[in-house]
Length: 447
Ligand code: HEM
Image 1 (cartoon, rainbow, N blue to C red):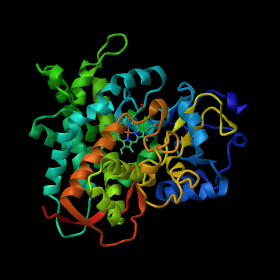
Image 2: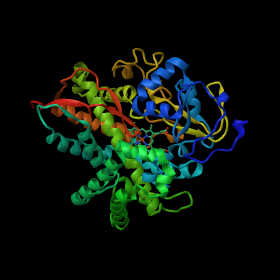
Image 3: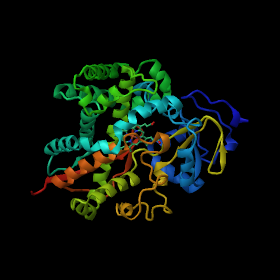
Image 4: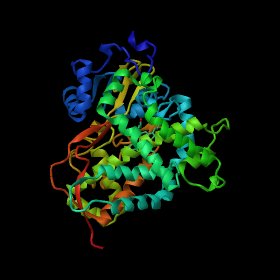
């Protein structure tokens, strides 16, 4: 029986018994993959209409995905045994960039060990220490904002979030070094985000891309600078007083007393950068895209009430989640949503669909931050950061940064929109971003 088969190697397509899986589109794997790449939102909505809370998609090099969008099933996945639900294995597509030590790519004991080292650096209370840096970086970008003409905000948001990570996570204090690192990283990410390269890498599969070092030529200059930074930090006489994440990680110890190796540190820094900067930038772009189309909400935000600011961020992440799903690969058969799913499938708690459930969120398509003042966000119904032992390590960091940056932006700029139609949700690598980058017209606000 397929259910008892051993787990196939990560990155290959597991062959699971069809009968055991929930229904799904009959189209061929390449056709399903193309639709998933170009029209993810429409495809998910269609499938839910046709097949309900659980359905199956087949994606090239990703094997079989079983989507779940009922809160009870999501709870089962997030509270299930991490030995059975492998997330690292399901994220293997990121291997060539993040490296073998990345917390995102590990599972079970190795994952827990890395995660435990990193968690204290991202504790909610610690974020306050970064507030002034975040605000300062936002203010500098606002100074450069083009006035009186429509322009997309996402690139500016990305400059802000990258600068914030380089200062608070990498702890790069020197302006010239930061500029060099910014350029090297920018070049590497642009290289990888080109659709043709993505298609080529999808065709090869992540392990072969890694083995052949296809990313090396563009990654090497950035890696060199990162290793220099690690070395510089290690030797710093004031290491114990520094509050950047790299300094904290250098002082952290595994359970056996071992410090992190340089390779581990490099891979985790790259992970934090990749997981943290575009995601937060795109969330900020979506927040502005929604707010300019709801001037009453924008006005209320200006009143400065912290709870409302928090609600605006939560509502943005609900209605425009940056990732449509999270993945867990089953290492053993597991009962989810009343079905025993076989080993080898990827279970996908669907952020996009659970956030649009009318039984949880009345008028689900309306942008209404007030709903989060009336009702707190549910652990298994508001999941922009995933959940369980894999929940986003940077969730507090991201929410805090969104709040600080939004406060600066709406306090200093008048923002309006030229085209009142909502921007379409489009894909950038694996993230969902506004089609026109969150285009606004900005004017300086009278003091
Ligand atoms: C709005 C911004 C962000 C969004 C929407 C987001 C979303 C996510 C999601 C959905 C996951 C997978 C969770 C799961 O599998 O259950 C994740 C994991 C992760 N995120 Fe974020 N993230 C954001 C910002 C950040 C930031 C700022 C950082 C760090 C600076 C970060 C670091 C990580 C790490 C390290 C993981 C892996 C956790 C693990 O596997 O144990 N993220 N994030």
